[in-house]
Amino acid sequence: MTRNRTLLWLLVPGGLSAQPIITTDNMPILGDVVPIGICSDPIDTVALNASAGAMMTWDFSGLTEQTEEQFLFVDPVGSLWENDFPTSSLCGISWDGSHAYYTTTSGMLEQDGLCTIVPGPPPEDTAKVLLTTDSESLMSLPLAFGDTHSDVFSGTFEAGGFIGAVDGTIDLVADGHGTLVLPNGTFSNVLRYRFDRVQNNTVLGTTTSTSKVQWGWVSEDHRYWLLLMEVDFNGFNPIELVWYSKVPPLVSGTGLADRSMETLTVWPNPVPAGGSLRLAGTGVPDRARLLLADATGRVVRTWSGPGTQFSLEGLVAGSYMLTVLDARGTRRSTSRIVVQ
Image 1 (tube, rainbow, N blue to C red):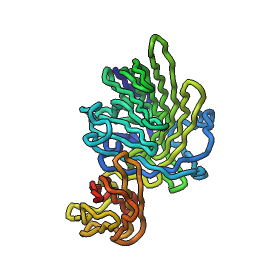
Image 2 (cartoon, one colour):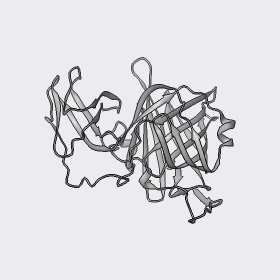
Image 3 (tube, helix red, strand yellow):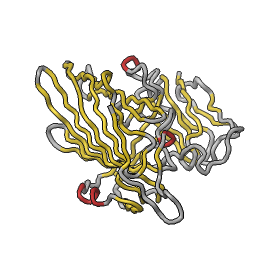
């Protein structure tokens, strides 16, 4: 169940609206690989809440990157938990192996559930949240400054040999727009939102709750988030997470040349273990960035710079997904590669 309403519209000289509008064009698509910088900076919740409003400038150019990780978006068919999510249209795999399953429509971004392998001695445990009763509507689209969105969700969870019920609520408000400054550049047409989430887990008659407060910055000109900050309370203590998109993918057609006649071929495929991949065709970028991910979505090899031949020495036999980006971070090709 959802509701969405507009609190206010900003009127500016020379036009009715100078604010960004986020649509399904700004959501991730199949084959997107988004390198992110995870930062060690503490979250100042008071300052964040005070920086809402119109025509803002958020300066986070001084963020301290700790590690580089990535998000990978693949077809749910062929993913580790495809049978649990037969109606999902997209699977997002994070650097820790978590798989989030989504359904994107013209008016909504919904999460159908989340699965992950819990680290530990073999056999490893799997934790699942299956929102089969009522999926979680994360964001109502299009989204503009002043819009609010609320939803309730419910389903089941499995972890540690236990099966229980899960339910919760979310509340989102798009509370600011303006310019965002990050270590990798300055971005305009940015919308910020605050997202509050509560999840209740009930097993054997006992209910525990977790909560999350999240601030996200999204640009009308790019796909996926530019910057995300969240405080996640897991029932024991708060956990903070700060990351920014290092190579934000552009929305198709945003300042890009027509590539309808280009071709890009990756060969040979299958490739012998220890061999090399080659790029050929009219669509080969001058400076390519390649990311090779294994079956769990973990990026196991990256290459960048000029050249059209890339060594696979040291990789074990198996199926991989290769994504080719150009220097601007625009995805040019996604291919499934078999190493024999």
